[in-house]
Image (tube, rainbow, N blue to C red; front, side):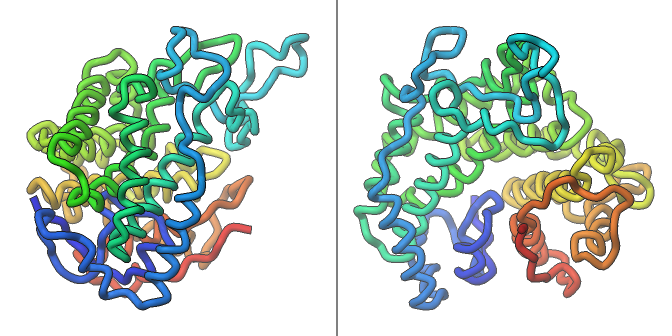
Length: 379
């Protein structure tokens, strides 16, 4: 397997990643140490990476077992989270069951005494900062700290996350876990990116153990009732399910699993979810139509990126009814750039940078100047 790398280090450091994070200019085998690719960046960019890593060095390791209240199964190693758009029902004395307010995030989501969403993001960000700092500077202390965090989350028996999501996006008074909760581990795609940067600092046995954990999680995603139900989702959830399975399976060495899913994307996803004009009707119906359109296309671009790795081309794939990734990109571009307005305005603004970064990486294939754009930041 090889890694395609392009773009500037500054883009890498400032924006979210898409599968492998190390995009500079050339194709570099994974067997080659990654630190050298960051020599394309400026001293200021390397210094920024080191500063972020230094900050992460000072932060405590967030553990799943830190929560005060265990999930319903009683094991604090089970990840648990709140369904983010669900709020207490003001008409009920105890507020239960919670009721849905699409697009409005309940701040209870970040309650660390009960839920793990915040510590999952903290873990991802810390490992990412440390891995990038190591790649930029070669400072082994950064790699050692990143590995310590990763071991705590994926390897150490007392604290490691169970490779399943039984209690994700719980709705108080209604359900202790649901299929939509599987989207929470989209965060782990960034962790896989970071592990690749740390590979040359990992003993072989430890590296294999990470691959085994993600292999076990892939198996659960494919075989559990929640996983099978999420795979059948018709909106962004189904695409992000596919993206997660493909990224994790590929990391675990299960490329045939990834290929099978990728080969089905044009007919199973594109033909169904993309309209004749390139719009995504299921996302446009939401209270944040632009956000969800861009979020869905990021999933598509992630799938196309994995397709490059395993030999399933998706960038130019066209379904039997004429739908394609490029058609969807071209539809949303004027709205994403602010040149046109969708009929329904998002009820909350979002950071558009991750989409533009993903498109920038895909533009290695498309070579379209319109796909290069400096995103505006959310207010």
